[in-house]
Amino acid sequence: MKLFTKKPIEVLLAQASEQGDHVLKRGLGPASLTLLGIGGVIGAGIFVLTGQQAAINAGPGIVLSFVLAGVVCAFAAMCYAELASMIPVSGSAYTYTYATLGEFIAWLIAWDLILEYGLASATVAAGWSGHFNDMLQGFGLGLPHVWSSAPYTFDGSHLVATGSVLNVPAVAIVCLMGGLLITGVTESAVVNNVIVSLKIMVVLAVIAVGFGHIHPDYWHPLIPPRIEPTATDVQGHFGLPGILTAAGVIFFAYIGFESVSTAAQEAKNPQRDMPIGILASLGICTLLYILMSLVITGIAPYASLNNEAPVAIALGNVPGLGWLRQAVNVAVAIGLGSTILSLLYGQSRIFYAMARDGLLPPMFGTVNPRTRTPIWGTAITAAAAGLVAGLFPIAVLGELVSMGTLLAFALICGGVLFLRIKEPNLPRSFKTPLVWVTAPLGAAGCVFLISGLPAPTWLRLFVWMAIGLVVYFTYAYRHSRYHESKTLPAE
Image (tube, rainbow, N blue to C red):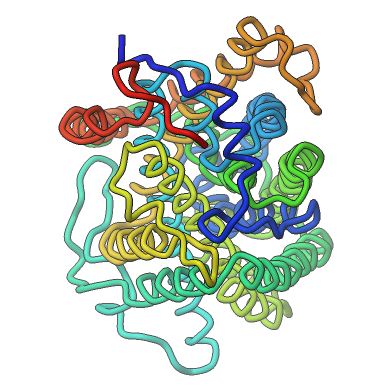
């Protein structure tokens, strides 16, 4: 039964009120939290995966994929908002699951979140590299292919060598953002707010200008005819199944709002500010995603968008918009950095929470007394994400991140229902509307989107989870602070 030991709610609430140089600094208000979420959501999803999934799976129907993903995400977001306002502690889904479903499930979701955040930052870095190189080429520069792309690509079922050595720009941007995070959360938030504001301005410019150059013929048919799987292409493409597959893959784009919930222990007034940050960032970003998908599939044939910089390529298809294409590349080169920062932030705070519970070595929970940031957790996260970003293509990474995100969201929806039954009297400054409808629909929607992901993604997830089980039983289980055989630590 030790596997299902729950972390007491009173311990979590005590942690939330701790003071001193050994804990995280509360320096984020509702605006910073909202921009943190937007910074994480408006990234490779809108600038890269939107075009790629339109070309590969959904055609112009990618807009329907975003509507479907946005609805499912909205259900999960309301559950997140309730838990974040009730348990204002770092750790996001890991912490909430530990308090509701027990340690073993919390470990599984934490291991899943490591995959989710680590690969998400690597995915965004890979997308950033493509736009960065396109920007350099616009200035007559450009990096050799051997040093600006991954040494492997994905042919739909296998990794294939490309002849490249390393995606150096992808590695560099991850290391740069990791270094910025280490300097301090307040300093990082200021830089993030400026970058996100610039990024939103560029997205709005693309939408505003692009709508004036749309060719409605590019939207027909909205859902291209289904191409059935074959012996060499086991996935198949387009049709309604393609809409579902694209919705599952692009779901990773919504991971950014979850990074708001990892900031609960650094929010100035978490009970009020966390729901605002989560729901506001999700609502704004969903609208921008839908509008952007309409624009890029309306100004260029969807089949031309399967490349590393689809928004820039789509703008290049319109005479007279070359200036905007280069502006997009410059903004993306700056703006995707905030997405990477947001994702590295979320991962390092999950490591921090796990280390405080004894499930990871203490170094992951060590806070620098001057910067009040978990230096080692941030550095290790950045190093691992940079290595993956330098070696692997965005297609494989995006699918795995979506799988992890959907599993986490489904468990959060279940956790909200559990606490409504088990702890009905706990203070809730935000309550999920119609929770007995919203939470089950959220969980069911996540499972539905998971069903549309390619089968090889499941195999990769099972391998990752098997590794997680080995780590849990060889280290985490033996060092847990909350097993019944041990005295609960004073907080």
